[in-house]
Amino acid sequence: MTKPLKDETNICFGCSPNNPIGLKMEFEDDGDVCRAYYTARPEHMGWNDVVHGGLVATMLDEAMGRWLWVRNLITMTAEMTIRYSKPVPVGVRLTVESSGVSQKGKLIEMTARIILPDGSLAARARAKFLKVGPGNLPEKGDAE
Ligand SMILES: CCCCCCCCCCCC(=O)SCCNC(=O)CCNC(=O)[C@H](O)C(C)(C)COP(=O)(O)OP(=O)(O)OC[C@H]1O[C@@H](n2cnc3c(N)ncnc32)[C@H](O)[C@@H]1OP(=O)(O)O
Image (tube, rainbow, N blue to C red):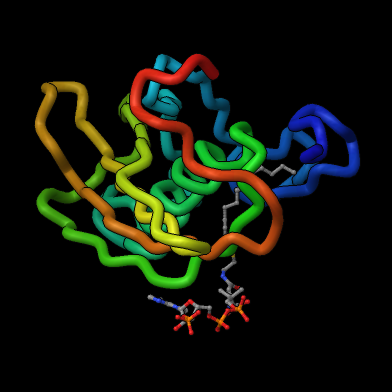
């Protein structure tokens, strides 16, 4: 079984409330989608009120990793491609969401996106995660 997300030994940079320099993203599950509403802070900026691209990648990676984690799929990110379509501003409420795409053996394909308050897509990721533990991707519509 995976570690409880609220365990004080969870120091994950993306989601732990215990990491003093972490993003502290809070996710919820909505059917097949894992979602966080997140407002990036000024210290997350690259320049010009725009979130650093590496942190955009971190948010997307975290959303996908978290989707897998709560489904007891123990994986590592093996590959990720990001399309940065629009600047992601600091100080606005972002929607960060992820979903599973497919599984072939140990390889699980995932997708994630960041949506701006006006509903437009700012960034999207496709990624391959490799299983390093037990578990399989649930079929679409399976009870969680
Ligand atoms: C506490 C609360 C937290 C809860 C929330 C937690 C969220 C965390 C989110 C962050 C997640 C991360 O960032 S994880 C950190 C970033 N990622 C990493 O550090 C990963 C570093 N890489 C590795 O450790 C390794 O390369 C692995 C584990 C990914 C794979 O190693 P391995 O298991 O030995 O697998 P390997 O033999 O190389 O490959 C197995 C098969 O997969 C294929 N394969 C390997 N890579 C790829 C690829 N990119 N695309 C296609 N296929 C691939 C190989 O060809 C092979 O095929 P065949 O020969 O079998 O046919």
